[in-house]
Image 1: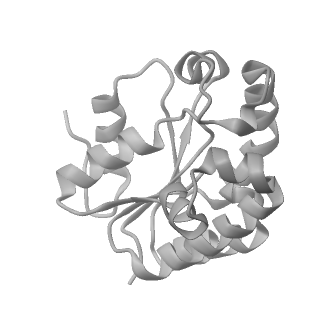
Image 2: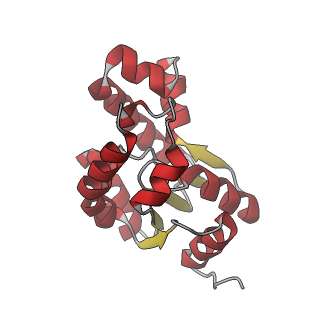
Image 3: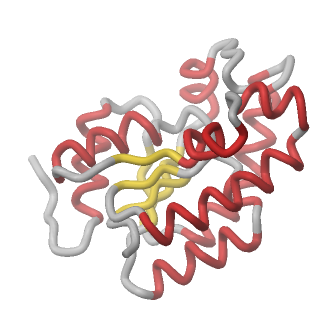
Amino acid sequence: MSPILVLVGPPASGKTTIGTGVAEILGVSFRDTDGDVEVLAGATVADVFVQHGETYFRALEEQAVARAMAEHAGVLALGGGAVTSAATRELLVAHARQGGTVVWLDVDLPSAARRVGLSRDRPILGVNPRAMLRTMLEQRAPLYGEVATFTVATGGRTPEDVVAQVLAALPGRTAVS
């Protein structure tokens, strides 16, 4: 068993919104590995970051991704930093080699900053969310590109438009007008 679609991308790229929309249309379940991490930790992602730090969170995230890739057959969204793990990237590349679809939801800085605002649910963005987003977008872009079979830009677009493009990226599907 493996996901029919894996979504990767930075915070505020639309992974949850697009993932739930695609899953609903396809009639499959949606799963977000951030939720899996919260179950493993018994705390919110924000609390895990504050109480245990990013290294601890990333270790839990790597476990959560491996489990979800092995047991989830629907749409799977990974946390924005999941691709920083070499083991996770290997899983995603292997998934793609076996015919799986990994879509990178790419977002421009102004759109991401507008969507994220001053969210306290995103502790990795720290005190200056715009600067952190810029750094993350620049540093992680090559990692998203390494694992993606398809890239969809989400900035300045409606969720419906992005969902249609993501659906068109799935094998055996064509663009919806």
